[in-house]
Image 1 (tube, rainbow, N blue to C red):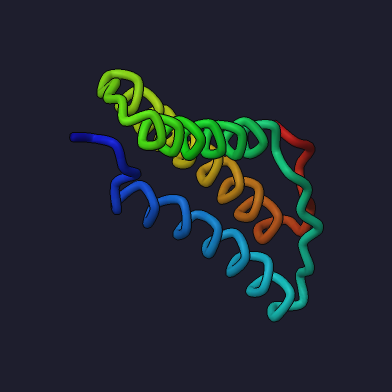
Image 2: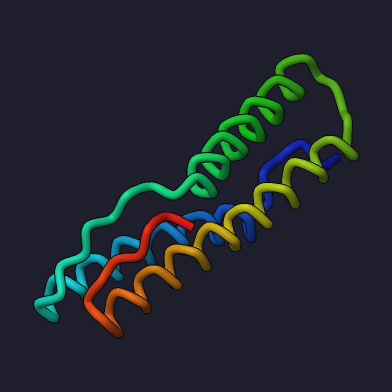
Length: 105
């Protein structure tokens, strides 16, 4: 039965958020404050996470199993989380290298 959010996905999502917060704090400590704005990828990622959580809860409440849909949601959120984290990391690295925050990709 695949009606749960796997541990590895939870760890991936939390790690991305901790990395973003850590990068902002590190920038501030190094006297290169960073003004961060949410990226569209991040907004889509958040929507995907909410839909996945709603799907898992709904399937559990209705005592249903739709493994292919859960798998699609899980791997979709994983791809969005990695891409969002990579885009934030790219923006942070560019900022740290030249002191400028690029426009949203």
